Image (cartoon, rainbow over all chains, first blue to last red; front, top):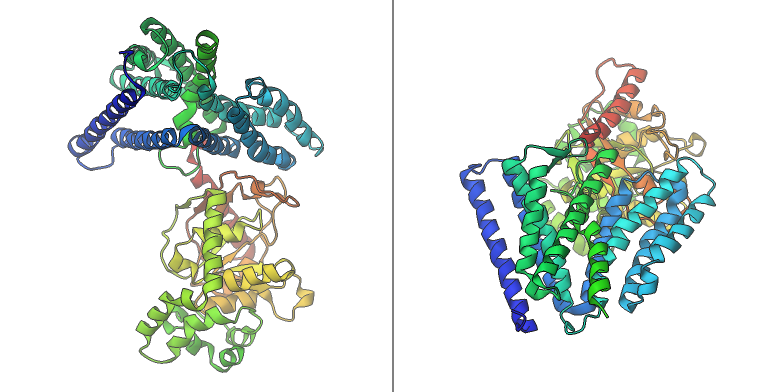
Length: 316
Length: 283
C-alpha cells in the first residue's frame, strides 16, 4: 500500500469517507421513515443531527485541505474561536476580567496560530501555558475585584488551554518533518480526526445497543464500559486499516490509535463534567444539537498527545 | 411633515384596525399634542401611515412598504447592518417560549444590562414586527450626540423620553401611551436604568404600571436576555464575543382593579420565570 501516490491516497480516502457518509445518511433517513414514521424521535433525530455535523465537518476540512497550509491554520483558528466563545460564555467571569477576556480572544488566540504558521515550536509550546498563564491574571488583578478570583483566573486559563492550545496542535501537525513523508502531513490530520470521531461514534452506538455498566453516571450517563470497549476496539482496527496513509507501521498505528482514542474518550468525559458543573446540557447556547465544543471535545484532548507521539518518534 | 401630522386627528393618521386594539383611556389630547415631542415624527411614520388617509389604498400601502428601502436607503441599510451585526456579535437566537412572533401589538419589557439590549430585542424580531416596534429610550443618553440621535430616531425608530421630570412638561408615560395608541409596539425596560449590580433585577419602577393602565388591552411580553452586560461592561471599548441568549416569555396584562404593588411583583416574576424557562437544565 505504501506505493500509493499522494493523489491516489487523497482520492481513496475522500471516496471512502464520502461513501461512508452517504451510507449513514441513507441509514438515518431510512430509520426516520420506518422506525420513527416521520415523527420526532430523540434517538434517531440525534443521530441525524450528528450525521449533518459530519457532513459539515468533512466538507469544511476538505475545502481547508485544498486551500493548503494557510487554509488549515485559518480553519482551526476559527474552530478555536468558536469553542473559546462557548467555553467563556458559561465561565464565572466578572466585570474585572473584561480586559483579560479581550486579550484571550483578540491577542492570545491569533498569536498562537501565528506562531504555528511561523513553525516556532519552542514558542507555541509554551506561549499559553507560560505567558498567557502569567499575564492574564495580572490584567484581572489590577482591577481590584478579588471575588472568586481563583475560580475566574483558573477558568480563563483552562478555556485557553483546551480550546486554543490543544486545538492548535492539530494544524501544528503540518510542521512535523518526517523523512520520506514530505508533502503528506495533512494525512496526519485526517488520520487523527477519523480515529477520534469513529471512536466517538462507535462508543455511542455500542452504548445504545448493549450499554449496561455506566462509567461515571454522575458526570455523563451516556458513557458505558461496553461503549468504551467497542469504541476503542473500533478505533484501533480502523487505525490499522488506515496505517497506509501514515508514517506508522501497522502495529505502531494500532498503538497510536489506542493512545489517541483513550485521550479522546477521557477528554469527552472531562468536558462533560464541566457542562454538568455549569448546569448545561450542550455547549453553545441555542445551537441545535450542541455547539462546536460538543463536536471537538474528544479531539481537544487527543491532539497534543498525538502530536507529541508523532513528533518524538517519527520526526527528525 | 410635522405640521401635516398635527393637523390630522390621531384616528385618521393611524389605521383604524390597529387603533381599536388599545382602548383609548383619556389620552387623546396627549396623543395629538405629543406628536412633535415624539421626536422621530419624520419620514418613516409618514411612509407607513400617509397612504391610509385615502380610502381603499391598502395595495398602494403594501407596495410603498415593500419599496421603502428605495426611498429611505440609508436608514434601511443601517437598520439591516445593525440587525446583522447584533446577531453576529451576540450569537443569540431568539427563543419564543411563551408566545409566537406574530404581528400583534405588544409591549415587550426586558431586563436591562447593556445599551445593546434594545438592539438585541429589536434584531430578534422578524422583519414585519420590527417595522412596527419602537424602543423607548432615555433622551439623556440617546440625544447626546449626532450619531446616537441618528440611530435612535432614524434607524431604531425609537420613542425618546426625558427620564427626569424636571426637563419635561409632559409625563413620559403619556408619550409611550401615545405611541401605543398610534398602533405601534414598544420595547421598554421597566427597571428604568441599566443594572450593573450582581442582582438579577433592580426594583421595577412604577412606569410600566401606569403605561398598562393606559393600555390595558395590549399584551405585555417579558423578555429575558443573558450575558449582554458581560459583552461590553460600562466604560469598556472592545466587546468580548461571548454568546448571548434572548427568550420571550408568556404575555400578561393588567387585571381589572389590580393594585400597583401586586402588578409590579407580577412583572418581576414574569421576567424571572422567563429566565428560568430559558435554562431548564438548572432546575
